[in-house]
Image (cartoon, rainbow, N blue to C red; front, top):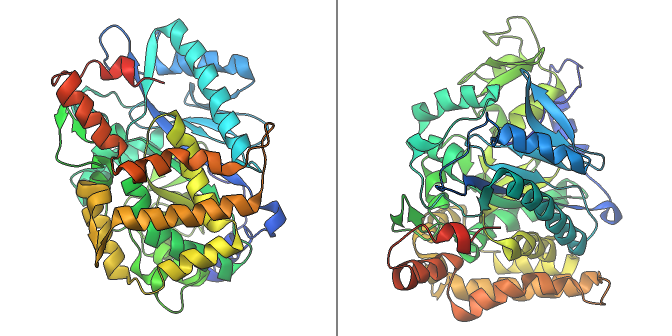
Length: 455
């Protein structure tokens, strides 16, 4: 949700220009990188309530103080709404005040983990000064939606008005969810298709492994990944599993045709977001957008529209794996490790393709529907998601070993998925671990979560 408009002003009048824009993202294997993103909730330490943007201890002040670490501010209407620095990393602001790190494009998972660690050290320093804390869960375990202040970003005004028209949980998605995701490269259209099919099919497996949102408003909600449930009723036009990915003829053009049929949110002009919610990018391509009559889109408009789609795997000039709940420190390294192991080694990718070779789009959609409630216990054909996850981790493990990227102590990248092996071996997800603590040690009291699970 933090994609920034491009500065390109070239008029776009034909679909081939849109296809070419995505094709330009292809990179040779030696240039493949790993970009990790994660979000976290911010709360006051004295009463565990949400933090507003304004004020001496607000989110705005937090972003101002983070600039001491070399971050440059991004302003909108006089407010600091994001931070950026050389190398491509940025810190952005989600609708309900969630803080997101969009990491730089890095060569190894060791680099990724170091980046996350450095970021959390900076965050903790500023948090102590402001007397705020941060949590990582897929869905906020305590707050009601109406408690949460909206951040002053124009694009969220448009989305906030549109969401209730197309789903009952879109505002919950915006205000009360957090995720961790990884952005990965492809070398060609065919390589993209292979990775997107594997990523789409196995996204429910990642959802199960990282399930970490069993509480809502201080009590169990009946799900292990309530965040994943929320996405099911956010906006059917732009979310979920895309069955056409598994069909013959899948390619960049097929994805572009899908994107053109997803209703727009807005267009960015002269520092402002023009509300185009529900309009057609196809009409825009023909110069028939009612809000900008006679005007044609730019590649910047196309890039912005691409960023407003939220399927389980999103294609831009790279691929985004979007199925996991936010979580603790180890998960922030494990999620990129899982997908890097599966998709960045040729033997591992082939093995993953073989694993899902006869899965249909309809089966994956059904699996996606069931996993939020039962996670690793979910049945699939004659087995369970837990057993599939074991096979998936074995493939990822081999892929990471084949990459042979060593840290300063001579360890390869497999160490970053050790936490996932513990989850599969025990059969207990982070959500179930939390529920056990909530019921047995905390006796149904939610407040200890702010100290025991804080970053």
